[in-house]
Length: 297
Image 1 (cartoon, rainbow, N blue to C red):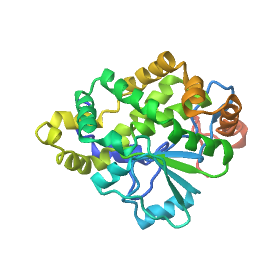
Image 2: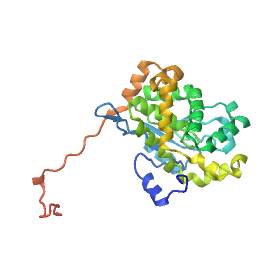
Image 3: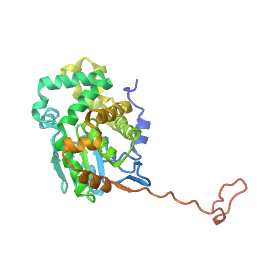
Image 4: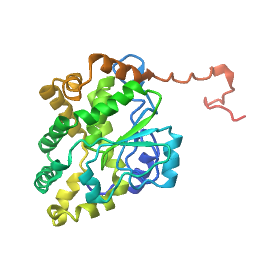
């Protein structure tokens, strides 16, 4: 079952290499840069846009790591009710602006709405996630606009955006950015699926948190479905984005409220030339052993 605990050694290995980034006290941190695009010779710009789970438990070491990454602004997509419910307030970070841009307003987190949302999540079905993700798309225009305008206006000021888990609201915003840049659907889906690994260090905390919700208290399988981050879910989302909203650019124009010029600038700012492969040394530049291996000097 793909929701069973992952091997700790495997998780540690994956988290130690790109696109994962280490920020102490924060899980599921990834750089959205270095992904290939359909623009010849261009990749998404590394070190500009990061995604993560909530930052409420960031440590002093993590704060220093943020500064080393050059991150000047953090965008928090969570609702006020969410922060109170989980006791995860916005931290004060010296020298870093944390901007609160909730996707859902407080009224969307009424007990009735939460129960319905949990019921959808608990099924673990792709169709259920599409209902949730369409709700995010319909509500997120103003919040997503803030982050996209950052990329448009401040291409030399790295930023990070997050929700609670760094999976759904964060995953959709990441997909929109990557899609605008020309990253293919399969690559976007693989990025989304990495959350399965990125969230693993927080598994115990998340399960403990969910156990306090009556719906999950006696339904472990339903709670585990909250961990679901399957590539096919993102592929289905991208298909829905095309069919229901007319594609990413149409969505950004109609719902987010940006112009064609804005989109062109965002794309320009988020693309850089792909690094050239290092040239191999000329065979005559170093002696070789009879079997072809280089002789240590």
